[in-house]
Length: 214
Image (tube, rainbow, N blue to C red; front, side, top):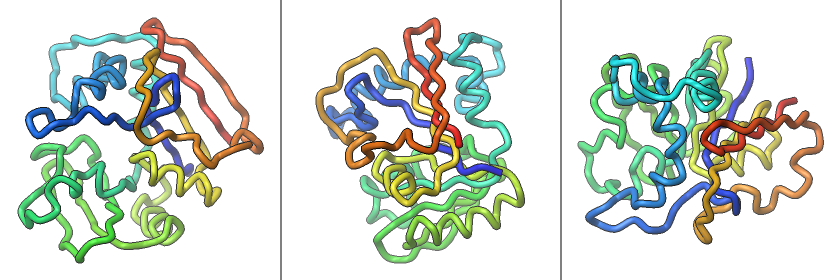
């Protein structure tokens, strides 16, 4: 069992983008940041339910497969679920469609009013809670039943878990782009590499995959 993080970040360290508009909720920069991951065969199969066999199969795809492997529970922030945009809609079920790609219990950290769990097709159930990183992790570990717990994001949530020393393995896919603004993953994490073994690998796309592992 491990507590894992996988994030896409820019060369200047940003894990979020700032060019969203009401007409383009994700913005163009999000596509640039995640382009290598979205191009993989694994993403197309697991997220888009595309069984055509299309998509890249190199280094990026190997990390995409690892992203989904052996996960028993997920923790994410309200923004990753979509509550920041649709918090007043009691029927909102998140960004992820009728069958989210998680297929495990997902614990959504919120600061708002309590919400009932939402059961989705494919085994995903969203649970909403106001909790510290350790409290959320304790619930996720129990739900994971010996498998890994993935802290999915966003960047602020990941930083909270890293500062608390709760992450066993951090993988960042560094896209060869400059964003210039957003939420930077590395802020207030000086010396994070201490206590981890660090490995780097460059993919055919130019994405650099850096893994910090205990």
